[in-house]
Image 1 (tube, rainbow, N blue to C red):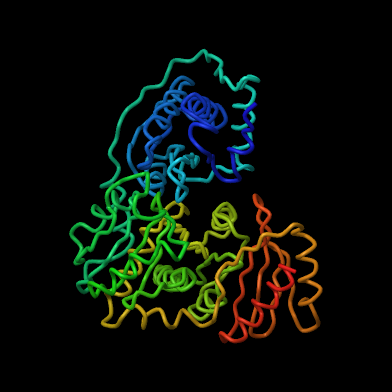
Image 2 (cartoon, helix red, strand yellow):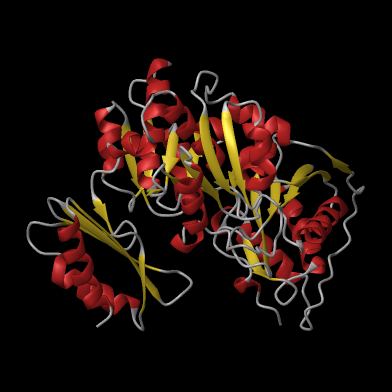
Length: 460
């Protein structure tokens, strides 16, 4: 029997099509989503993967069969789906597998107002309901429901999405900029032309053709090899900066005018500075900024210097969004280039972060490398994965070696050890036999010494 626990992850549904799931199963997920949320209407969108149109259509039919009206917005980025959920005040379903290979697909679900749906907020109940409808031979039979079927309608939300974002960042007075954008054959190729239309920007497009087989490179800018083309293009055309979007275009990575990647921590600090200034101008005394525990020390330092309040959380969008709701934070950022905005229903949008970078750069005469230098104060290792047989035992060994007198230790998310001018975090993967290491120090030599010392113990 199909194991839905392999398909339903902590925050979304994701697996290989048709081996792990197909239209019949998607139809069941649509019905279960409506039953669990009690929604009378939902909004459904999809990315450019070959399997996305049929899977999303089946989901919509399942939802309509359980009485919900369905607004189909067609091709969209994930943050465009969040815009639709927020502006229409409807639960939503986005069909995408983000940066995964072409044979994968998935569903990101949210409640009305783009509120996240994860294992603890409805996803486990949806899975259990679909399991109850699945027979031993993997056939799925959705029980009939004594309700009038919902209606399916279509709506174009791209212009509204662009206008909403442009209303949150003033780009009217920026100087002309040349911007190279690598969409990776993903949904950035769909959203960027509309969002950038009319701005004083010379756009240099790369891989804007929507193609879910990813013929040029993986749509995962977190992997340095997928930034190589963009870096070369920025240098070739003399662009002021480069932007790289992942497959569903909810994450954005930035490259400066030299072709050098700008760390997501530096972007978090830059955007935090702008959002703090805006909030303070509107009368907020101490605007809250959320950052996860493996973003650079630069972020909380900048936040405090500018009169904001930094709040540290675990890694993962559900933790960020939950803490944003509790604290009414204006902005949150993660090392993975997810950026969250209170004015965007606390949801993540790489496009809005990119617009902030354009506004900051275009509002002054210098280069992006000069602008971000003040937000890049430490030497960082980046995330390093190690395959281990016993995650707990290796973590205990690292703790014994480094958690000594004069250090601070916490276990908010894995093991974090900090000295006066350095810190590292060692976290276990929830899905693979991996330990993930992040190290930061005041100078590169100290960072390398710590990195190599911890890795020696982890990989012993």
